[in-house]
Length: 169
Length: 102
Image (cartoon, rainbow over all chains, first blue to last red; front, side, top):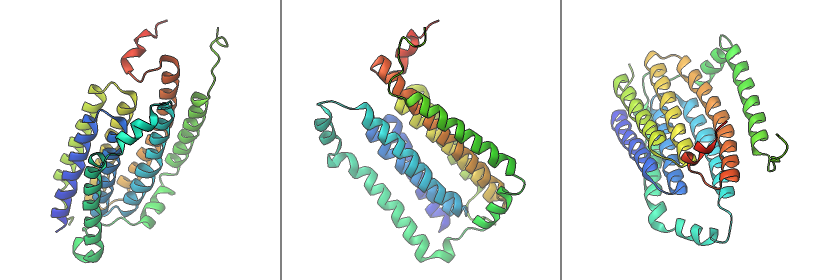
């Protein structure tokens, strides 16, 4: 049964990615990208990487996609925005991603209801992960924090509204 | 043993990677290119998690965590750059940047 769920989720992931890279509109692509990330999250769960699945949903499909939505909103200002949003929210646009997300939800319900049979062989728990992460990989955690700090400073500097054109001769 | 064969997981990861790469190469919209880069990084993380699940080891998920950190930093800087490009060139076309000379 795990294999069936695996194939189903893989099909959803590949289909969503193909739809994502062929959409002309960035918002439509974003819907399919979120679907692709969610399906990879379900794959992580099926592979026994529960903590990675949770992080995938919260950080990838949650936080990073919110960044994309913010930037798309900031880039689309003007009078035509309302008409464009109305055109974006037609049912034909969101019905596909919604149905596939419903499929993923059904898979999750199956896994929860029949948990024992869907369990994969090797489950790496969050405790094991934490023990290794703050043991041998402590330096990697420090480097990741430095990377995040650099990303924060860079994003702040680049996102400042007025870079004066005459300031840098 | 694991219920999911490692080869098929790695195959799926490779397919997603190639799809994301095609997206980066084909699309000229900067936001779509960044989204395709997300797919590429996600496929890499999937490969690590598949391998970690195969050996029952936590290292794969740790690599996924580091890739997640990388993706977050990359998206922050990349979207900041996208905003600047849009302010200066009033377009999101990556080919418009060929005017940057000197």
